[in-house]
Amino acid sequence: MSPSLPNLETFPPLRDWQRKALVKYLRRRSPDFMAVATPGAGKTTFALRIAAELLNDGTVEAVTVVCPTEHLKTQWASAAARVGIQLDASFRNADVHSSRDFHGAVITYAQVGMAPAVHRRRTMTRPTMVILDEIHHAGDSRSWGDGVKNAFDEAERRLMLTGTPFRSDDNPIPFVEYERGQDGLQRSRSDSIYGYSDALSDGVVRPVIFLAYSGETRWRTSAGDELAARLGEPMTKDLIAQAWRTALDHRGDWMPQVLRAADARLSRIRSHGMTDAGGLIIASDQQTARAYAKLIGEISGEQAVVVLSDDNGSSSRIAEFALSEQRWMVAVRMVSEGVDIPRLAVGVYATSASTPLYFAQAIGRFVRARRTGETATVFVPSVPHLLGLASEMEAQRDHILGAPKEKDGLDDDLLERAQRAEDAEGELDKRFEALSATAELDQVIYDGTSFGTGARTGTPEEEEYLGLPGLLSPDQVTTLLSKRQSDQIAAQKRAAALTPDPVPAQREPVAPMSAGERRAALRRQLNTLVAAHHHRTNLPHGKIHAELRRLCGGPPSAQATIEQLEERIATVQTL
Image 1 (cartoon, rainbow, N blue to C red):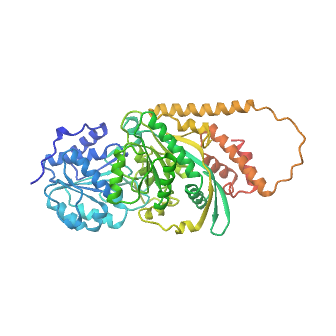
Image 2: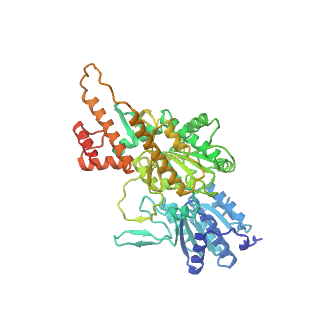
């Protein structure tokens, strides 16, 4: 017996963007429609309303939802059931046909890629609407893309959904239209767009405050050389990757210090309005995820939930965490996209993955708003590329074919191994040995602007930012951050004015500095001047260093000569 049709009268009210997109869809009645909406905007509700409309008017008799992960299958089926659409989340390729007890099924892109013929037969048996959730995944591999194309090219309707309509490669996405621009490049075309900035102004999503932590890092190379660098300074990609990796090492001081700050921020949010607020630590691999879970457990006094792979046990742990009041979850990749845990309010981006796609998906876990005034705070390493992505939260991107590609991620190959156990003596670990890393608050990024004058961990200056109220409007966030920054600068000026002039005294002759000591002193002086320029202009440290290199020439300051450092010091004083 076929299930009854969904009752449109019992559907939840639509948001403005959903209603406008629905009207546009129903007027056009075209086979393909692509909706781009920021995470948390309500793409699922929008898609299910269209499915209900088409089922009720007889345009289609079945609905197939394709999503990236097994966990999202359950999430989609539950959401559909709440509005009267019954979807089989347990359908397997071996079943061949869907049961008549359901309006359709929820499957993964991997299922389609393995047996496109099965899903083609299902699609042709009854007039079918196909909802392709996070459609950019159909370009992940040739088998997935070809499978989706072969399975659903005979579908009555296809609705493509995505919160991140761009990829880091040239793989075309099935059923997405591309338009050639004046530059000769093809760009994806969307039928409805609802970006983060629009959702923020409508109060649909939360404002995200990024706390960027820098610090000194030391490591030993495979050749036995010891190197040191300050996280956030302009360096070669190899050096940035190794400094970044060193900071993320759970055996150093950087991660415990940042996790301690993140837990303090979570406590502040919980005590000021969001009593059930939760935190998420995103790790690079399974081994470090377990280590982070142990660390945050010791810091918070409460055991963290660990999610390592896309299996049934992990899905239940995510669901239980979403409904609980537990403080922390640690995950590798599974919670980076599509998973709905609205109470997540604090994040620690402790992974070396840095493509715009992955970063946007990860940050999307924290933007879902439940009530007016909720804010999210994400702790990130002070790495120029990540800070750039944080500053561009509101940028709207398209998928571009044919553009020259530069690898965004410094360590993105780790993601390919993130879902399986890794050897503790893996290839990456053999390249260098992390020796030490310390953390300090470098800057606060909000709405594309940098705030703050930096602060050591555990100081009142850091506490000023960790103690920001958890319930603020976007305008209040900007006002409060600006005030905190002004107060910091004023306090520093008062302290400098109260410091008495040094009394001349007889001193022992100072031994001449070695070349290494002089170079280290010049680097410290340069960094101090760059920090001062940052506070005057709000330009990121990395951009200031890059401008000095452009004006003076030479390598990053870590490799610069004494003469080059002296020239940059003289130059920054004139900026």
